[in-house]
Image 1 (cartoon, rainbow, N blue to C red):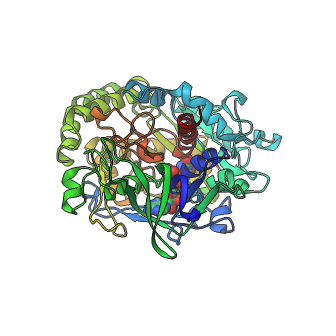
Image 2: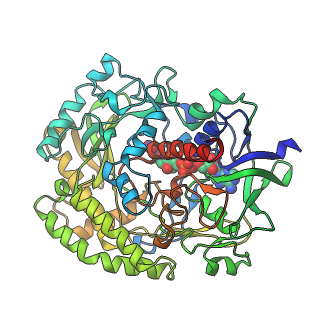
Length: 569
Ligand code: FAD
């Protein structure tokens, strides 16, 4: 029956999956199905409301994945949020649109992913977006941009919220951070991110709604007869052709839908875009992964790739907050992105030496944690590269989000490139059972002390004029909990009891050469398969300094062209 046979079957109608669905269905003679566990959220106010960040948390559209106990972080579990909806996590996220540092994307090519570098991705950052040029009021309030960095007619609308924070705020923040040595960055989206910036959001300014992946890539195209979203349907695993030769050939996906279990057939390809806490799980359930993991649940091994589900990288988020001395209206989009030198000042070379001297230990620990699935030499190479990015390229070391809202002035911050590495693995052959998710937050002391160090920097900023004149008492952590000049252990204990996931998990199906621990190659095809790709945050081999959707949209746009090229040229 036609309703279960397509050329391309995409698992996950989220941020990345909808890009692929849209671009492939531009080809009139191919048929595309998207299997999505969630449903439409077009009329869900928790999604559309521009100031509604957080309202969707804990509702039916939040997967709210639970981690294992975080033994290095005081023991408790963490909740890792992700959207379960047509539009995926872009429907519940913070809407910040910042890309990455050029050197980080170039690193993808340096480690062996031919063709993936800043210059080759840049046209896709632009292709995916449309800048809504700020109004003169918005420019007064600090919106700034270089037109060459931005797309003119791409699907995702980016720009500043209709109501921005009052124009007196930016000059005062700028003066404060200049005193700390941080320059103003007019537009952080050109590959150079360091500085204080007023970044754009993924927002439709005229309609005054969030512009998520569904509004950008799906709803305007929903009438395409060759594009079908199969919603409220859960993918269980990939189904393989029985007479597979040297490469495994996917013929479809087993799903549990409203009518029970069935198969959606794919004559060309299956593309996994279920997110970095799901796509690698689907690979394992389908027999692609570490034989030690699969054999525990009697899953026959189709392709032995021991690193499936390894390399899980996330950041940790904490915040300081203050009483405000004024009433602030509008949606702030101020971010400070200082480099390691700007945070550590004169101590930076000591910190760099300490980190450098620890890289071999980190690599050994990560390999050991994975029972050897991650080779020590590969972990070490990745850490050396990360060290170079932080201390030589001087990419941003932390993001500090400044939030003057109502009568309070709060902040959120996260060190951008932690060294901790975790994993996600199945605990059952039954796809309805949750996997074991362990980000290993604060696995290394350096990651914890980075949090403490950035917290001190944030407090210093709030104590520096003119910002210091805008705020009163410190509400969190507060001088009682963490006194002025508190020692590092006191800051660290506060961090451990207050941090949360920064909701940026990446790396669980890394794009890397196979002998370097990769799960997918530079065409995003899973090694050992003929026609299964992963296109979502799982494939990012390293954490980024930007928020993720910008890069995911660009990666999915480029992936769409790679896929099309295979079939039409
Ligand atoms: P997703 O967008 O999560 O898509 C995966 C899709 O697959 C989902 O729709 C899901 O329902 C579906 N799915 C999963 N499993 C199955 C299955 N078995 N069967 C069928 N369907 C399935 N990024 C930014 O750029 N800016 C921000 O301000 C920002 N803030 C964030 C705030 C929060 C609270 C969170 C959680 C994330 C935030 N991020 C932000 C990160 C960013 O939104 C995500 O990294 C990104 O959206 C992930 O895209 P993806 O394509 O990898 O997966």
